[in-house]
Image (cartoon, rainbow, N blue to C red):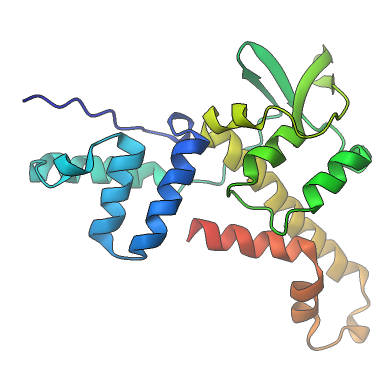
Length: 212
């Protein structure tokens, strides 16, 4: 019997839906390597679980090495314009002027990380483009969370790029906060204060937990 295996070479080949299914199963196995690779092969390569143990050792090793080559590279650039079903969507062009309703809907989620709520967050941040001139564009006004299911079929390169944007933004924010305070007046527990009260640090820790 012949078995065709499609081995992805980058995150663009993995949809958000596949990634979320992968993460759910991964929690069961923890750090156990055999279980981890079984999840990788099943969810990311589409290999039925019953066939994994039957793979020749050389093929198994080659697939494993190919996956390891890119699976840890999640620090991807933000894609400001993406296309879904032939329609161009633009990332919120000015977060300082984000519609208040959009801001409220995003902040009602406790964490900003790739989980079951992430597709809704992406549907808030990316909206259809109304007009475009060079690198500049305007997007449709916010009408509530709509079409989040579309983002389940978008490649993880787009999702990781958006999350990386917020990670870098949070890093810069924390640095600016520390620089703006006078050194002699910094309390010794400033880092713990920021961790407890700063949303920026919360984003940073969520990100670190996810990629671990």
